[in-house]
Length: 211
Ligand code: PMT
Image 1 (cartoon, protein in one colour):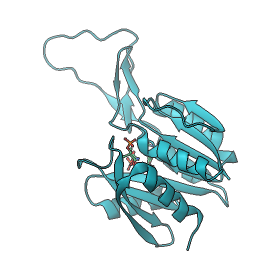
Image 2: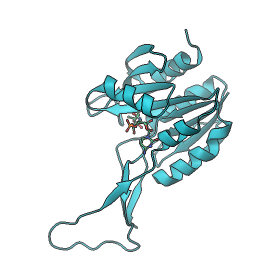
Image 3: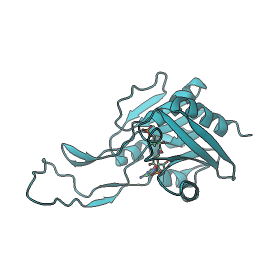
């Protein structure tokens, strides 16, 4: 099976030395890539800037920085993929203007104008062909289930893995995580708090070997 995974944060430049980003380290997405490799799949990993080494044995490894670059790489790789897992924390906003020189500090406030980035999951959901399995993530601080189910419906996912973020010991940057996995057909699985590397294998086995 050809598996396409995205992982890590994106960076949206403000000027040559500053950017908007988030706390994603890529640990969850890289763990899924490693688990898919262990199962013998051909894996393409599209990664934002993280400090992890690329897993050995990848069919393709694409490093990107911005949401626009991530969108381009994912759209290019999507047609050949059987399973697509969207674990990246893509910035939802970017500065309207990226200054070509370092912005000098002055007295008082600095107001940055932001615009929406492309919703990559939404774009891929619209392009999904028969037989492709599209799996999204939902990172939530509140109303985990209703937000996850709404995202699955709006973005045409077949599965969504919902995680609570903003609590210590799980979610962003931790080695551990807990997930609730929802299928578009109504099934639901609770994956308790455990190492992301273990969770990744369980996630793939539920998606690839439906009961
Ligand atoms: O990288 P780690 O430090 O290990 O942390 C893991 C994680 C918390 C980042 C991961 O488990 C996770 O939740 N990833 C999804 C983060 C996210 O952006 O969730 P969201 O609920 O905002 O987005 C919903 C879905 O749409 C996600 O599949 C996301 O990849 C996708 N999306 C969002 C915005 C956007 N512009 N384009 C997208 O494709």
